[in-house]
Image (cartoon, rainbow, N blue to C red):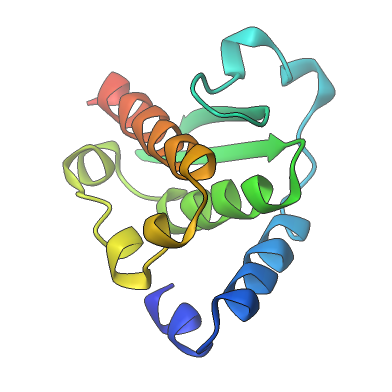
Length: 127
């Protein structure tokens, strides 16, 4: 993911890349768009689901906002298919390396923090 972001010099191009990532998200079931799956702390509505298969966690997600959908797509693209222990222990340092948080509005940056916390919590629940 760091390499993908480094291909772009301008943040406008990086936002376009995030939008494209969001468009690539697999369909999220309407029946899972519930309070239970809603990530708290996001200005937009973001749903996250997690399942364990063959010792790995698999995430699915959706959002009602296009940039936010790209952000959650980025996160689950990195962590889906990884072991719960690895996700729970990870520092999500690639977010800083690509400069994402500091190039988001304060409300989107807060949402990013909530998304990370939700992914870590899901992983910790399986450790």
